[in-house]
Image (cartoon, rainbow, N blue to C red; front, side, top):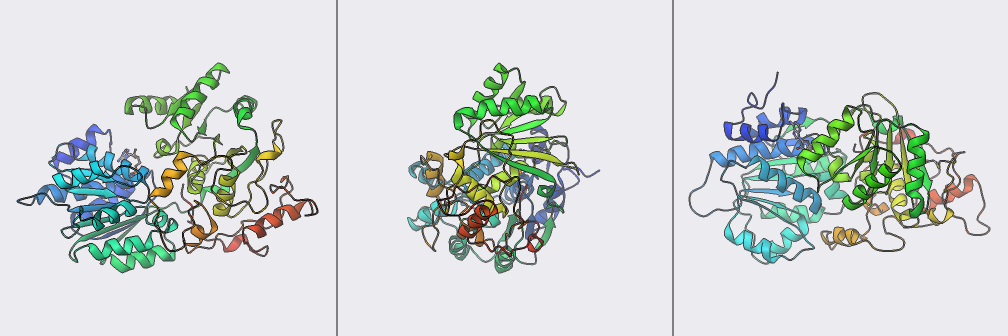
Amino acid sequence: MVTFQSLGLTDTLLRAVESEGYESPTPVQEQSIPPLLAGRDVLGVAQTGTGKTAAFTLPVLQIMDRDQPRGKRHIRALILSPTRELAAQIDERLGAYSEHMDVRHRVIFGGVNQNPQVRALQRGLDVLVATPGRLLDLVGQGHVDLSKIKFFVLDEADRMLDMGFINDIKKVLRLLPNRRQNLLFSATMPKSIATLAGSFLNDAVMVDVSPKEMTVDRIQQKIMFVRKADKRRLIVKLIKEQKVKCGIVFTRTKHGANRLVKQLDQSHISAAAIHGNKSQGARTKALAGFKNGSIPILVATDIASRGIDVEGITHVFNYDLPNIPESYVHRIGRTARAGRSGVAYAFCDDSESGYLVGIQNLIGMEIPVETQNPFHFEGAIPKPGQKAGEMKNKKSSQNKKSNEDRPRQHGYKGKRGSNSSNNNRGQSRKPRDSKPNNNNRGQTRRKPGEGSGSNGSRNNRNSRGRSNNDSGNNRRQGGHRR
Ligand code: AMP
């Protein structure tokens, strides 16, 4: 059996891994750690939830711990991440794995006061985790010196390109010394990523743990348009009517997850919440109860759901639509594991129709409307030509924050999931099935005289710039993350 020890990790890291409760390495760790320890560049195709953070941080930490420089501390490893959430999560993991080491690490990202970050940089760091925008700002102000970097990690490279960070990445690369070890991780491997990888990796070892088959094909997706105030009654009805024994409900916020657990409890549905504010112990307990069937419903936020790999999940409920379209694919991939099938419901209220447009742009199809919906609310259906991403009624603070780390150039339109950002992936995302959907009530609200029936959906497709002749057969597999 492959163990962390047999991969060549030192006792210091073995202790850290053990206290994290990891029993054996995941496939991406098994394949990445040995070549990284041997000093090779690695190109990893792995999604979040595969254990890729440990796959790249453990060997980097080990080499850094071994090769401690004399004199003043300087940044020896740079980890670039597309979002502040992911950057913070990597930094948190670094803290856990380097617990028994003399390694100083720090995360920097935009949208917050830079002074504490500058002070940490001045005190000296070994590892810097950063989003590109803030990193370049601080480099420009002379607070960050990247000239002694030994390890450069580009995480979630496909998402970086989706978000329009390519020029920022190129700028960062120009600031790095020539002799260094490079690591690139990406959930998908479109041509644009292969080109980027080719531009800076040297004789890299390729590690591919991407799913060979798209789960999404076995998932029955359904959208339900509903008022926010009716979501609670709708979910209770669905869970009870369908006697859900193993289902996961996604909310956008931790607070929302807690509240929903209480509300489900009032309706005599046993549920547990799993999110970032819960202690590791509470998360483990909730997950164990869910796995052994004593808790039928798990209410989770996106970040917390990473790593949830329970085979028997029959239902996924998008209680709130995610503001990041890729999260939808990741969420629904929690069901239909290991060859089974599953149902994924998405509730869309009138403030979320823009998110739905973004999701449908990404997956290249309209999600069929569930007709059995006593709470159906026309007002939540996207308007003709509605753009992706924006909240219709209010701009959430989360949205505002998310944009702060965005590049300020090369035509980025500032909306998540817009067609322009999808095009950056260099993949064709075409409708899986160009036939009109009979179940579909016509998701686009029509103006008078705009026709009816399947025309509605065709108009909608045209409004997103897609051709009606697109055939699902052309669609590149592997473009979705689970
Ligand atoms: P990542 O793909 O890096 O986001 O990791 C997903 C989750 O898997 C995190 O919660 C990690 O703590 C956890 N994890 C990473 N490696 C292992 C392992 N070998 N065994 C069990 N859990 C792990």
